[in-house]
Length: 480
Image (tube, rainbow, N blue to C red):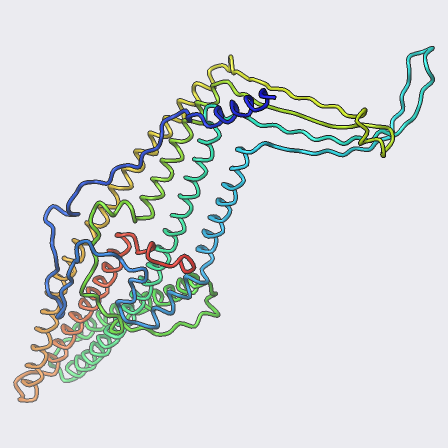
């Protein structure tokens, strides 16, 4: 009476044994207190705005809304909803979750049933009974259970769970990259439009210079070489328009693809650079939090976890494996006799398999698993270093952008004042029209540089939010 209970208890104890192989411990976060050797709390004031870095701040789930551009928000929302790449990542996550659920099946007994019906011919030995033909009906069930004594199956499932984590963070990474690519494309497109406007104005002024130079040639006060020089400059400037227009078209096609549309069906709202407000306060996560919120670091951590679990799987493969099995069935030549106790047959047993000699393959498989873990650990450290480098680069970039914008704004203001003075002198008759046109062109060139720096400052702001993790953890599951 007590034997079955003892067997069951022993099986439970064996199945609950410790898993071989090293347990995974999450890598400690770096203890850095800042991202750069000389931490800064703000940038220089440029174009009447200084950006403050709020230490310990949390990146919002939809951080781009601080630019206060409803059309931009609408485009990003469309991309998050309809982008095929993001949907593919979500589907892959669901597939990995279902595979994990399937993997949990190893912890339960495997039960199978079988029903059979056949017609058979039986030939007795010569001189014995005559041959006979009969029907044979059978009904049987088998149950088997592998005792996970060494925890190899548990390590296998642990690795699958880590794979699910990696895919979950891959979805987050896809979300962050998608949103940042959309915003970068919109900023670039807006800057290209402003550059085209400035370039067209410059071409028009150069054309006016050519007209004046030709008049001077006719009057005999200027050589024709001056006309050729101005025409060459105008043609060179005009040649920059086509590449800018091409970039606008390419940005539009990119936005169409990112939002799940074809270029022919994509209807894009026009967003000017002036429509995008530069955020004056930027959250700056503490360094110890960076490794807990950057998707690429979390993916590397999950891969390290999976590699660590593989060591236990390879170790368990070198140790004895115990399997319990039992079967019960009936067989009879008459269908109604299947439930006759005399037709019953059963079996119960246990098997032990011990690898003895495999040519060193099991040993080196375990050694390869250890090497893979070491490789993943190095990859993790490299990913962390890259994350800190990216944050440091963007912080410094924002500081340099502000300094460049200060200088560029001074250049624009100086060129504008010079242009105003020459216009006054021209009206007073003490400056030539050609001098005034030259001043106008210098102003437009300064304006072109100003547009480029403004756009770079906005894009580096985007880069900082992305470098800090993109705020994916603050996005509702239904939207991220």
